[in-house]
Length: 541
Image 1 (tube, helix red, strand yellow):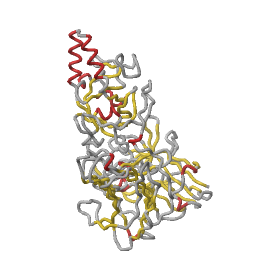
Image 2 (cartoon, helix red, strand yellow):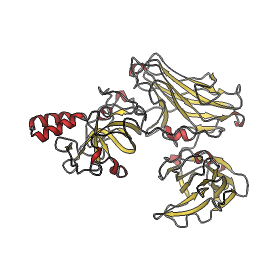
Image 3 (cartoon, helix red, strand yellow):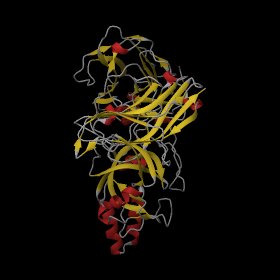
Image 4 (cartoon, one colour):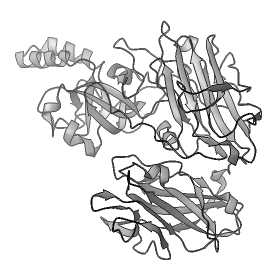
């Protein structure tokens, strides 16, 4: 399916005027490079406070890491817009819902000295200049005890690295909203290494379920920036289409080269009904010295893999805007066997807008899959495991295939703080116990539907093996063998936060009566706890 690209390139965006509110204003930022330096938004190369303040951020990297020194707050009792009246840079502080950060705290120390000396003209002149360099930060309630200057006055002038949404305004200025993580010092928190996954068969990836590069990583996809210091490939979410893209726009004109690899999960070629690869590409910003290629790889690591170049058609960047989506052609993989990886290599010899083509990929199809259903035309027809239903698991069966270490069960329907969920765990007696167990529903009639999608909410704070071993399972009622489905999106690790699984296409079972379930498996290296609720089926009649 060939689609049009409606995402506007960042360099053509107009600078929006600041609104008089802390809650709304999502104008596109202008493209300005700050004097304080340039980061990519990665954990080990965060954006600077100046970048966040200017709105000059990588649109592909959100949530992004931003570093700066905590220098004050916006006193929202005086104004919900940062100005000379509301900018508060002196202790004691009375506002806990936000903070201000800057690349250098020393001018703010001088501001306090001028205030204490009663030098009003010098104080006001310096204050007005400093209002132009601070970035605003929205503080969620769970971070205020650590970062808020009311609860933690010692945080003033400390350097912090925060992860949140950039390129938007808060309290009238560009800054950071919706924080998800933070770390003291100039760097963020290093993500866990990508986990190995089992080989997959045919698949169709259109980036509608896994909307971040981290979500793709849980499925075995790898983003490998092998040269340069940029963030590589990122999922781009728009109103009418999601896709994955990369460029070297934030690289330096005198720097380079920049090389970014996007690598699929391992593919078992022998399980494919057809050994084929297809995808679509789009391009913007014509420039010499940029290229994209696709390879069959023997490993997922570009540094060690034997790479075989495939003959594929890629889009060419037009003089203005984005090209139409261009089909790669049906590429034969018959010359290869066993388990392989597919890798796209982007390369730009120099960085910067004038030297870097933006390449986008979508609708990656391995094994000649049918195009996924348009779920916007589907309606919900079945729910189970209700988060507010004490009997939400009524009719469900627990089939314990393997129990070890003295455990008597894996699954149970639990309640916590008035909420309910299906809980699976084989961690018992301070030990990871190998186990295999299925939890599955009573029969569900799919006879009226030609397409069926399954989704649910889940939480998993500890993720040693569950993202690899945990599966959705479906079988026709009366059968004994399960068909397993990988889960597109896993919740954030390290927290008990429920998030959606993404939509899993089970249309192969449309028209049948089925049992739906979850497979829990563990071994000595990990027996994670998996919490599941709000199971839903949507269908197209």
